[in-house]
Image: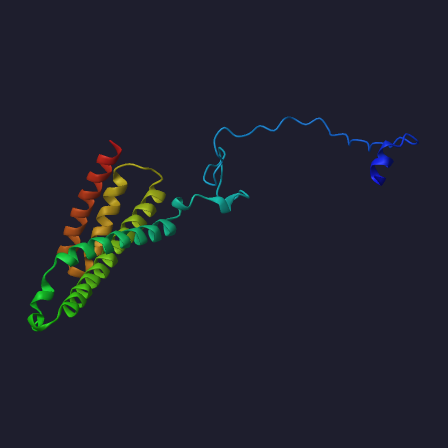
Length: 189
């Protein structure tokens, strides 16, 4: 009762606090499309702008190479596990006929795991080398055309085939370059 009675008391009117005056400002306009870190204004310079830390990660050759290694490794691991499960080399084990089911399953699992690891590493290295070389070539040439996959494919094939000698490096260069150009041509035309 006390506070209500005080509110209804007509003895003294209470003063409302004065509203602060707001300067005349233009209305806030919301963007029509989302502004993401890789949508930069026109004339954006990555090195002198305060927004340099918000660069598109796919423009970074190291990030692109690590991503390609990871995704290629995952794809290679899946392929290796599938193809390793269809490989019958474990049946050539001298004691295969005398093993129980659990031992046979363990031996086939080891074969599948080893095949998956091997293919994961190989696919990852191919992805790392190719995407790294292509990114560097694209940045150095400052253009995006069919010569980039040609140069990157030749360099990647030569690097990956170098351990097999000069003939393997030359064959890897030609095969990888031709395949890269064919895939890029198909994807962009």
